[in-house]
Picture (cartoon, rainbow, N blue to C red):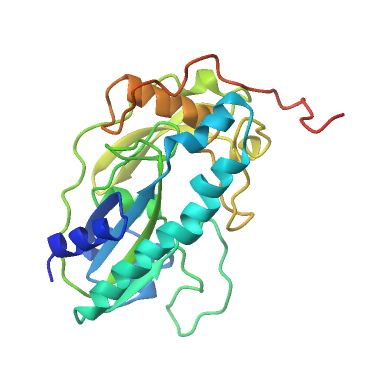
Length: 280
C-alpha cells in the first residue's frame, strides 16, 4: 500500500485535503502531544479534510443567516461528512493489513481526563494539535491570524487525522507562503490581535499574531464557542477577521479555489461588543 493509493481512495471518499507525515517529524514534541503516546507503533500520520463551502459564509458576511455556517461549515461538516471520510479511509488502510486510528479534531487545550496507566506515561486523554500535524504533513501553514491555511482553500477546511503503522512516504513540507502576514489587526473590531510571535514547526518558521482568545469569545461577528470543549479556542472561520482572510487570499491569487465574484461584494456586516443582537 502506497501513499498514492491511500490518497486516491481518500479523494474518492470525499477528501479535498490530504497529506502524510512520518513519525520522525514529531520527534521534538512532548509525550502528552505526541502521536506515539496514543499508538506506540505509529509510523505515519495522515491528515485529511473536507472543504468548507464558501457559500456557508455568505449569510454571516451579510448578517442575515448564521445557522447555515454552523451546520454545513462547522458541526455537520466536522462530525458527519469529514468523519465519514476519515472512517472510510481507515477501513481502506485496515483492509490492506495495517492498523488505522481515526482521530477527530479535538482542541489540544483540553486538560487531562484520567490517571497515568504506567510510570512515565502521559495522563489521558492525549490530544494532538491537528493544525500542527497538518503543517508537518505538508498540508499547509499557520497564517498570521493563527488559523491553518492551505494552498487550495486558505482557511476553508475541516481536518481530521489517522495514525497508522503503515510506513507511507511523507508528503513534502509546504515551501510556498500563502499568507501575506499583514492587515489582520486592522479588521478586528475588538482589537484582539496585538504583538507577534514566531511559530516554528519542523524548521518552517511562520510569523503569527498574538491573539486574545478571551476577547474573541465576546465577538458577535461570526465567531462561536468551540463546539468540542469550553477550553478550546473559539471557532473563527466565519468571524470577520477570517472572512477578510478568505477574501484577501482569493483576491491576491494566493489560493487556487476561486470564484467568479469575490466574497466581499459590499462592506462587511459587523457589530461592536456592546450591541445586544437579541434586544427587542
